[in-house]
Length: 395
Image (cartoon, rainbow, N blue to C red; front, side, top):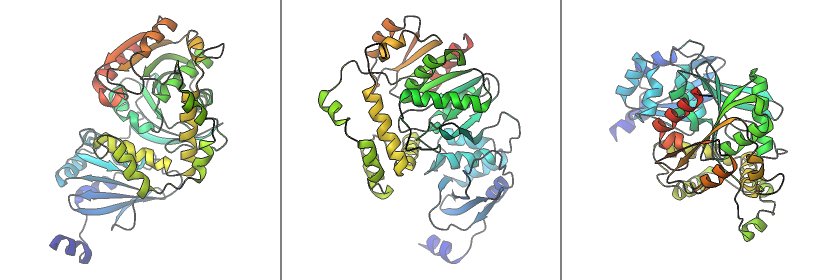
């Protein structure tokens, strides 16, 4: 009670740790998407706002609803201030917690790290034929492009960047319709359209060739990219990739003929109502990576364009034709880049039973089975990244 009264009546000067961090602010590292940002910094029970605008950062008293928040104990903030590069490590160890917007939160941590080398963690936007695509990258060397799953964002590959940036240039991208990328209402949001977007990004970055890693829907997009432009991709790593179902539920197929994506444009979706529902549906929805991932999903889903993209992409995943000349399984046989599939033993969305069909269609592909669920790069990070590194070393 006394602390609350103190906060309301007496301005408390910010800790030297926060002043020191913002003194190292590098606006070239963070992408504010063309607008100012307010990020709440909590030190124990006390709070200040980092206001980012016009290439500068300053501390202010908390005002209104922040765009993002970062919280840690005073000891952790002091440790980060003494060795600013430790910010991402403290985040990885969950001693520094970020919420609401990982793009801005991790961007601020990177922008105050004091790092100046070319391979430092950085965020950017790139104009492509499908619109602006948001990326997060670090490292230098052979490029590795990371593609997230349905409802996810580039932030789901933070662990991959941390693990592989010492040996490669790792580029995680928000696919169009998701995260901080453009959400065109005229987009098809099917695998070929997403694959064109990835190839457009390579062109924009001046990359003739890259390796790919894709999780879930991103895995399906990686397969399509390898089929459409095999000369542009070396190795392809597929983490629990979405694939065409061999049998469809007739009732669900009929429902998917309805214009559910258009309904998303007018669906009321205030965050205050949607968020509690989503967190109840997902186990451990208020903890660690899961909570941060839900925040990322909600940022897009609570916009009309984000809902349209989510529904349309989900519908196209289920409607992916399995058989025939243009069917997925027939075309998979023609995938020529070297490929590795990583399966989660406890994955309920893409069961390991798919592996036998992949072996039949693509006998040269390599397979790894891990003791995890649908997101190996987060659930079994060390084993996943060791497998990726070893596989790509032989590509």
